Length: 441
Image (tube, rainbow, N blue to C red):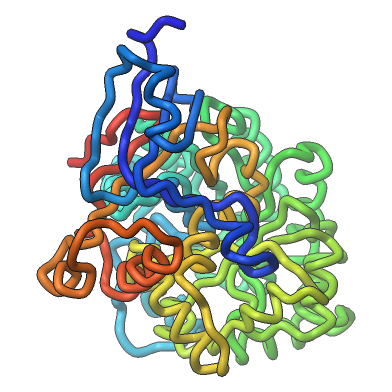
């Protein structure tokens, strides 16, 4: 082994080897109070307890993060990069908010230079918050897709995105056609899918802004390129669900609109799912589709409380990840997103532990994106995207999490719960992409 080509990281490590919604913490959580991660060419080569491993690597160059917790990089399963500049837009619920704020903002992204400027800011903000992979909405303009992928490629990120498809019920300046969206999407897939670490998602905005023909052509793209993703919105808002019922009277429910077009499969990620019926939960489970739980957005727009416990039930198990959904979401931080997710669960008389929340932000997100073979924990052979977390990043956090890092699972569970409730970008000491520290401007 050429030791000069590999590097090591020492510190306290926490990750997941199973789903804590279904098995005990002892079976699902992996915690080394003093661990060693060995990386070669961006890939994890070895991982375990430092005392047991260090003798195997007597001359290894090791970066030691004392008093820090090292986690897999966070995974954001639903976010809009063109909405970065309109985050915290006041006063409306979903449909009014789209027309008053979102559509006029997205109009700017026909200019590639503008899209590139916002994409660069957006990706730096993700990295600053410890997010190393994201599933991203762009706009209807191919220029915005190119700008995003170029910026993500420059940073060597594993990222998924796609051109938005919308040919009706939107301003003329923000509409394509069923045929043009098919042709442009096909060209973008051929250009960007599996280009480095980049992946493509066929992206109809939501059923209301796509004709049946456009949805059918989106399904045709999935059939032609079976390893790309489907990314859209589903059952977010009561008025939206009523509108979909009027627009598609022959469909059984909102999900059935997508199902009839061949858009419900094991690489489909649906954002929100706040108003889902039992039949829709059952169908999503059968299809092995995923839901992105976006609590800050759902609360900000008054959309409702997502039934996380139903989605993660034994009866209808569904892949779930966390989504910030910026700009309706109010923070780029998946810690703050988990904070709000805890409160959404509390309002329904349920609990969300820090381990469950961190699972959703890491391995759960990877599973939602069918990337658990690549990212999500510290298993040997995976890509080395990880973050270094300071549990005492602010004076209040230092008071709450005083003392050395704990040795037991119960104690680290208490510390990570405080991190989830009090932490944000200030808690992220460093973000690593393929074993290299990200440079954030």
